[in-house]
Length: 72
Image (cartoon, rainbow, N blue to C red):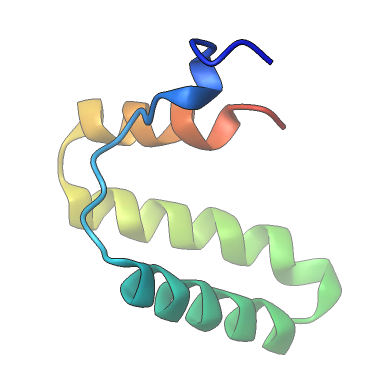
């Protein structure tokens, strides 16, 4: 892989340290596990809207969508 590919550069600033990211991951994973399987997509959509509202900046939300869409 070329080291200059788009996957080598972060699209968003890192605001949480590794421990904070792991804690956020655990919270989200536990909430997804608690949701019925048929409601997990709905949970993720609702979480995205809530977090977008907390961010409060549509340009930052667009950057987050682009970063999350990478390499799916």
